[in-house]
Amino acid sequence: MLTSKQRANLRSHANQMETILQVGKGGIGDALLKQVDDALTARELIKLRVLETAPAFARETAQELAEKTSSEVIQVIGTRFVLYRRNPKKPIYDPDK
Image (cartoon, rainbow, N blue to C red; front, side, top):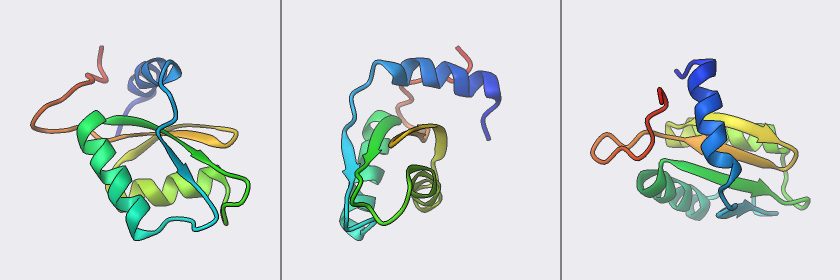
């Protein structure tokens, strides 16, 4: 569990990031889960977008993806959200700095 200070630090890193994945009308399927899991392993911090055609809102989608990928929701703004999962072998971000 991250503290609010750690979340704020990770949010500052996420501000300049581009959205790399989108959740569409298919919702959260096996293919999307695999992509999110792979992206979290490679990047640790990822930004996603929920399209208008998606079956759920951004906050619900973020929570579900976080649970299924063992990650944490850092931020949800409008249709975009940010997930974080530390890579134990090759950490990229230090939430404490």
